[in-house]
Amino acid sequence: MKNSIAGLAKELVKNPSLQDEFKKDPLAAIKKIESSAPVYFNDVWVYRIVIGVLGLVILSVILGVIGIMATNGEGVDSKVPTLLTATCSAAIGALTGLLAPAPNRTN
Image 1 (cartoon, one colour):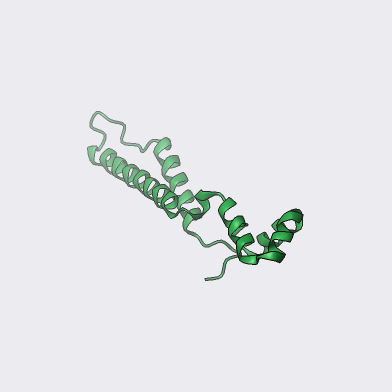
Image 2: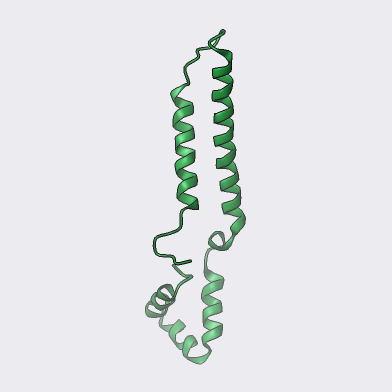
């Protein structure tokens, strides 16, 4: 929330010393608020790593299911384990949640 005007307003309301700094030098006060924001919100690599891992999970489950189906029950139960179905479904849901735009954002 610190990356929005509403977040800035909330920070100014709850911090009187920041209000004084903002009156003296608005740019310095904004930079101070920016520097106190958590790093992981601004770090695109975290999202890239998470998306890559979820993609690998989905691909490995798909390849595992193909491998199970290719054996046609030769020594292996040809039914797809529910664990693989649940894992792939969860990974697809998480990936969709990460890639879907936030409802309050406008692009």
